[in-house]
Image (cartoon, rainbow, N blue to C red; front, side, top):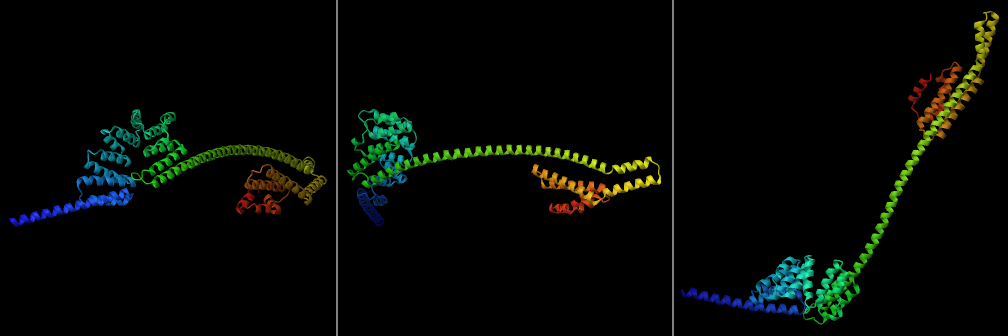
Length: 454
């Protein structure tokens, strides 16, 4: 029984010794992390603090380690990890106002303003509650709550905060209440302030209000004030970079504004040109349609007039042809009358037969037939030429049909004075045959037409 008890005692002493050594090691690593933090080596400070948290430190030391980890994450911009570290620090020190305040600031930086507002509802420190409520409400988009908090802060005559004034003025400016914003900032002078937070808030307001010169002056003074507080704040180079970034942002905003104005003017110009072009096209289309309709009406009227003239000319030609035939066959008619009325003596029969033979022979003379054919051809050619010049809208098929009709008419008239058929006369004319061949009409169509004028 004594031997196991001795073993247990030895093991307990060994564990206690190891635990003490680990805690002593954790304290050493923690002090190293604090030294790195004070020197501005935040990455090395963060690594050392994490190592210290894993070395089983004491509870009091662990709370400080989590607070240090929170500061390192906050400075390096890792707000999510900063929030987790702040939660751990506040959980280990629930009565510590610094840990509680750090947790609220971490929630606001991590874009969790609603959770921050819940904690701030029971915050006993009035100034901190009002300041952080204003920031959380602005982050949550609850501007009315932010304005109430800022107004409560500024209502206290013993509490004058340029940052609160500038923030309230920024809210009023965003709502378009420039006169109220100017009233709030009536006593604000950047040269009288040495608080970096106030200067930063004032510079932010000037930037939001578009007052570029004052914003640059505020950032320049902010960098100068920061240079005298290197042991507690970020280095001078960070604020110089912030100043350059703000100046670049303002210049970029001006360039974008000019670009937007130029693009808007260009868009208006292009839209106007498109509208004018569209209206011009519509007007041109309607004018073209009107002209086309008018031209069609004119062509129809010309066609009707031409057809009327052709009909009148055809009537006159038929009358002239009838008179010509009547004149040529007048003696034949007289001979026929004599043949019917007089006796059939040999003398009278011989005279009538001679007169009839002479007249028929005369009508069949080549000179008469050639003159008659030339007259008919000239008439038909004149009709075709007048149709082609007066009515240009006629299709080639319609012109070809008119040509066929004219040729058929000529052949028909000549065939009445001779023993030859109209078809033979029609196909025998060399000039018309060439025209038919040039028209490109199939041979079957030509044959069908010839069969119709037999």
